[in-house]
Amino acid sequence: MRNREETYGLIVESAYKMFAENGFDKTSLSMIAKEVGISKPAIYYYFDSKEKLIDVLFEEICKEIVNQYTLTVDDLTATNFEHYLLTIGFEMIEEQERDVNFNKIFNEYILLATRKDKYMNELNKIQMGYFENFSKVMNHGVKIGVVDGERIESKSNMLVMVIDNIGNFILTGLELDYKTIWEEAVKSVLRGVRND
Amino acid sequence: MRNREETYGLIVESAYKMFAENGFDKTSLSMIAKEVGISKPAIYYYFDSKEKLIDVLFEEICKEIVNQYTLTVDDLTATNFEHYLLTIGFEMIEEQERDVNFNKIFNEYILLATRKDKYMNELNKIQMGYFENFSKVMNHGVKIGVVDGERIESKSNMLVMVIDNIGNFILTGLELDYKTIWEEAVKSVLRGVRND
DNA sequence: GTCTATAGAGGGATAGAC
DNA sequence: GTCTATCCCTCTATAGAC
Image 1 (cartoon, rainbow over the protein chains, first blue to last red):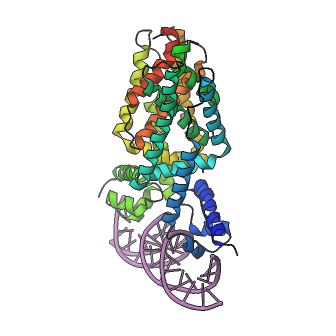
Image 2: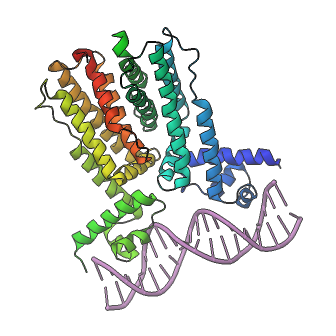
């Protein structure tokens, strides 16, 4: 027998894994209970319903995204700017390749969000945070003179489009040279000034 | 009472609509039957199982994508190249905004594909067709002198990443200026030569 | 906190009449 | 071709013992 926090954590952990692997609907509470090593009704001691479990998981995942993908601008100089942009992209790519489950379950939530507003609100916040983050970095790039200020929002948005979709393509198992694609995207937004 | 082809078509049509709106698992055959105006067992006269119906729909959708998104290169000249690239992107964006259901159900299939190989094979073919199409256009651009030949594959792939993900963001209801983003992407791959 | 047992609903699928 | 009736299964959720 385990204590409260331990079991709770195991349920969330197993749910994450199984929801990612099978989807919400094809994962029953019995399956999760079996994975944890408890009986199905025991889950109801911790979560009012299956939907609540899905909700809690969503909140956890949202928190993780916000924490992980907040970009800082303070240390950016003309000499390290390009390298920084490249690095954050490379890190995201490596992260996606390492843990496909994260992207899988996140796509589940995106589809869920297109059908239930309560998920959509949170999702949109995350997306906008994404855009704001990159916008912040790019505007800093303009300030320190390594990025052409013209159409700066479009450039920033384009970068988001590219890095975000790389995760989706990784999900489909297509093995492209994603780092080179990201490099191309970064180079293309810097090209105006540095003329390379 | 209707004839065979008519009912078949209505089932496929209703399934398309309801699968897009509710997802595969949350759409029962009873719901589809009700939408068509027949009884549930009548569906089994046309389809062996729910899975078969999902399969047939997938094939239809794949065919439609292949037909719709095959790009031609023959009429491309130095003067109309940029306009052509812009236009195909704009058309895709407008199409996505017009019919969100298409993207919704396609994302359902993508998730399904990550769990069942038979869908993944077809999906990968489509994706590769996508890349080849844009590659063809871009290589033609190099030939007629409007695109810098360096890293031509990366540029081509980047364009695919951008246009493809715009559809996903439209799905989430985020109202960005997608046409401007696409314009930025196109301009950035042409920038090397035309220096604008 | 976790269990066994079970209610209650709804799903996919089939039998057989018309 | 389409129907009614029905089977069987699995799911979510609850009751109540320990």
